[in-house]
Image: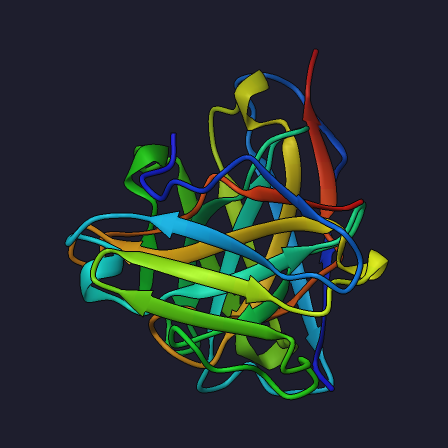
Amino acid sequence: QVQLQESGPGLVKPSETLFLTCTVSGGSISNKYWSWIRQPPGKGLDWIGYIYFSGSTNYNPSLKSRATISVDASRNQFSLRLSSVTAADTAVYYCARSSSWYLNLDSWGQGTPVTVSS
Amino acid sequence: QSVLTQPPSVSAAPGQKVTISCSGSSSNIGNNYVSWYQQLPGTAPKLLIYENNKRPSGIPDRFTGSKSGTSATLGITGLQTGDEADYYCGSWAGSLTTYVFGTGTKVTVL
């Protein structure tokens, strides 16, 4: 059974860049779509973007090009880079897997909390 | 602000049935598949329904999904205390430019 685990700093300063990694175990990163989703405290889910194992990407336009998702198939990992963070980027960040382009997100990581504060 | 609207909360007694609506438009639900996710308190979301009405392996048939036009519905029968959670619909929007989740519905078992 595939497992996903997010990792990265829990605290980031305003205007800096957030970098998170999702490590996939128990399955291959190939032929799947890998997404990042976030959830601000007490609020709903917000899709950030996805990467296909081959490297093609799709992002939420609301992030205005601040987000970049990359994949390292040799390490069975994919990553999120979010630049120029503000307090509004404070959230629990989840990574998730989909077997199809329409994003049936069938496996999720446990989530990692990120706070943006000086 | 999500383009998929759900009721903030629904409730029913154990053993009863609840339905959760997800209202959208032709640019999202009307032309795309709908998924449903369950988020138990303090945990990550879990896929309940995909492709409008299909259940992943391990999801009991107490959970059903349907879609009609620009709206989708999640039904939960035989309500259990363990079903108390937040439920979210999800679909592509705007010619596949972004994936959107619904506003979320809290289910309370009375």
